[in-house]
Amino acid sequence: MSASTVVNETTEAAANSLAPLKSETPRHLEIDDAEFRRHFNRKAFHIRHHLADHPLFTLPRLVELYRSLPEGHVEYNAGNIPVSQDPNLTPHNGLSPEETIRRIEECQSWLVIKHVENQPGYRELLNECLDQIEPHSEAFAPQMCKREAFIFISSPGSVTPFHMDPEYSFLLQIRGHKTISMFDGADRSILSEEDLEQYLSGGHRNLTFKDEFQAKAWVNELTPGQGLHVPLTTPHWVQNGNAVSVSFSIAFQSKQSEQKKIVYTTNAYLRKKGLQPVAYGTSKWRDEAKYFSYRALRRAFYLFGKEL
Ligand SMILES: [Fe+2]
Image 1 (cartoon, protein in one colour):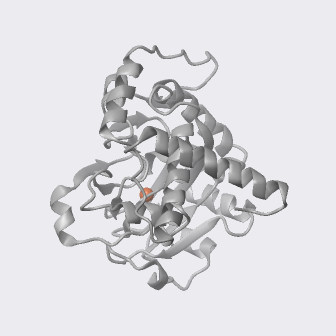
Image 2 (cartoon, helix red, strand yellow):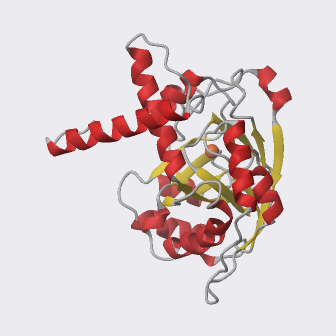
Image 3 (cartoon, protein in one colour):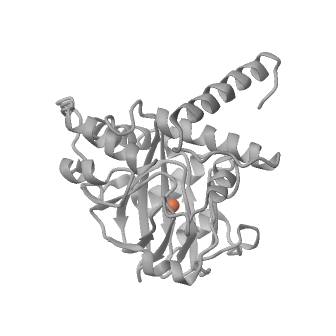
């Protein structure tokens, strides 16, 4: 998102009022609307939540959750790794996912359970949380869609390497303490157009970290009961504190994030063909032309039983 887009949308946001929550919806989050308006999808900001003692996040319950999942919903590795980690060389921890969760206190590991929005209990919780976010986010990221949730479980001292994520998200800290270093996603000395093209067209999330980046970091602490907004494709890395950490990440997409992904995918294709594509956010009509052309092409492929 360009700075000008943010400013325009911030102005639009001021004209909108928040829709009230349905009276029966539990209030899991405490959100400062002024802070939300100031920082959403630009910068990290804290919210508060009431999920730190929720029974869905105890380690025995998370083992049970893992057992109920189809194959491929868990990613895990050793947690004593550098901030700049080549994804092809990420070390394994030699354990099964279930052993990793059971022994997380001492096994120096990092594990994520993906797409828990498909699981009973977690799905309802995600929806209740995002139903609270949506009235705030709608003016900035209209048409919330693709609601997703992830649970991160990590050992004392473990590191999540420098990376970006493709969603708007709020990381709700359930247990333990984390320090999150986040960087301006619009700073092209840290995150290049090519990095974005590579990632949003299907590449790995990890990025190359240089020590000099750290001087530009927004460093945020996260303790149980706190949540942190992570803007779309904002580079960050995480240092776990000296206790086991459990975090619940609630995430979503919007029409705008879908468009951004398609424009970067198109730009990656054009760059591979030797062209110099105009960066996303520079020209509204070009972005829209790429978006609608890509969608038309994808529909045509679909009609012929193929995937784009
Ligand atoms: Fe992340």
